[in-house]
Length: 187
Image 1 (cartoon, rainbow, N blue to C red):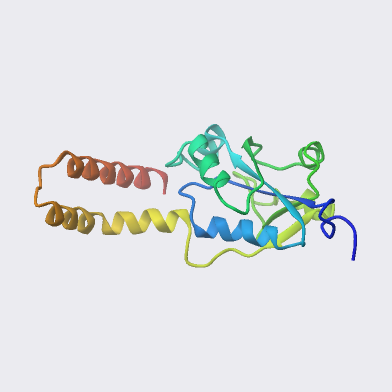
Image 2 (tube, one colour):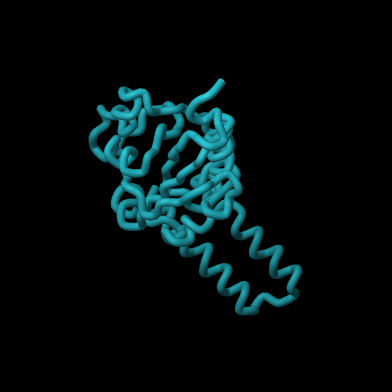
């Protein structure tokens, strides 16, 4: 077999985009799936800007530079575009020589427009490759686990340190309170 993606001198260029807040193994598995779509893949990952994330989903825990650097450190990723457009158009794909966009196949709607799928144009153009979500892990799940276990974590840290007045524990408590307030505001 020869052609794009089957010849090391002619890798297929794939693109995956997202927020990638609190980078976790579900994100890494997405990138691994992309890299395994063809024998030779150059994977470009788009990281959404703070401005668009705040406007469309709420404030992320990590800023765009932190999120982009976390993605950049993943062994499956060849290039990071940050900030990337919230909606990947065919024009954007063409301008970056992207052959296919990779995302799970569930229609992704934006804002109040619940009728559309932002990936519809790339699907219609035959430039969409479906991936599978990793069950049991998401940024929201991680935040909820931290919140549910925060009091126990602080108590265990106090027991280990033998000091309930340390600056570290005060900072930890303050951080958990801020996360709880953030979660209540954005969920």
